[in-house]
Length: 257
Picture 1 (cartoon, helix red, strand yellow):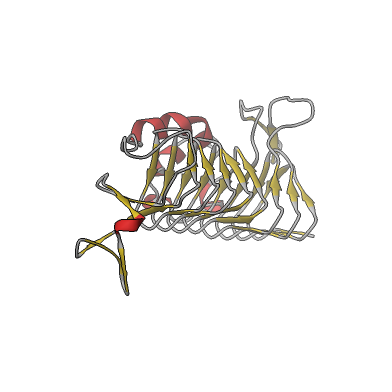
Picture 2 (spheres, one colour):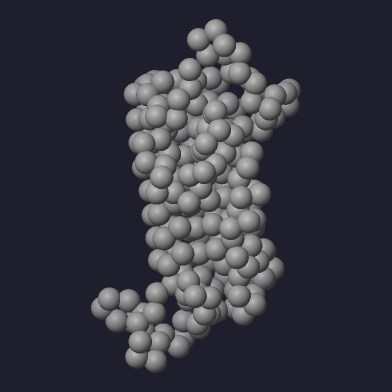
């Protein structure tokens, strides 16, 4: 029997908590795009789309767009005309291809990151140089989408990190999850058939042909590990470096060596 308590301990603080009210955690992925389109406001018209940003911008939560050249750096943050301002830092060279993208304060988007919407980035998230966010992505507080990491239709709960060379497709990373460099969460079987689980003798059909991995809070993967389509790890599980995990359900505190 799959229970949310085996994966996530503090969903209530996440803005997407309502998506997990279904019977199984992967139901959240089915509703993610529609949910984000409903809650994400359009970017201000002053933010250029479909071309690399020509200059670094500070985007406040109130929707004000400030040129970095106009800001003064203080010991406790940035100031504009003598007043402290907070917002998301969008660095020159970043590429935004949709107006349905929202950045909370403290978010940093580095040069040459590409972001498609809909997407919601919570406070303190980093989208690092060369990252590719392909749409339908939510991050909680303090997450990292790292250098040359590709993410699509996925949820990062608070403090989840895919910092180096990762692929995260149709997946959910619980709070404090850390993916080692080169981790791949594969999301499509060779035969392109539906992902089906058999758990304690019960056959569970997901209705999904694309389903990557669901990692409970505190899970970690070693460098260059691969999780096969439809791999579900209970909280505080480990996948050791260069190992192939799954498919199937693995309970909390599992170690895959």
